[in-house]
Image (cartoon, rainbow, N blue to C red; front, side, top):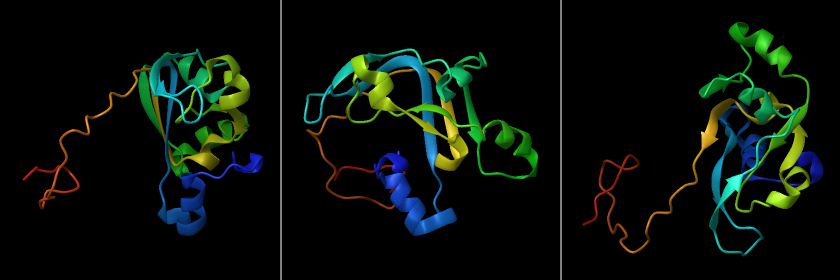
Length: 152
């Protein structure tokens, strides 16, 4: 994305913190996503298109492993994997917006997965998030933060 002139929070963290930052990517082949069709649009739950042939997502799907994680920081135990992943492939990014009709142009880009992420978490099928109601807000964080909070 950076080579297309798009800067995201992950890139800014890599620039500022270097190897002290840890970047986790998520992937899915099919499922649903909560996003808007256009910037400023209303969030809706939409079906995600099947991943395209030749993409990292499609490669993960073809393993027939439902869920897995890939540790992508190179070390002695994953040199073979890193060599295999050193060939650029298409990667799909879905965020605030999801445009089904122009998905290939709007959401896919060439990348080296290990250059983008330190860890990759795969779910063959995903389900859209359910927004948390903002009606009841916590007024005080207790010592258990950041693992939870109690409304006082």
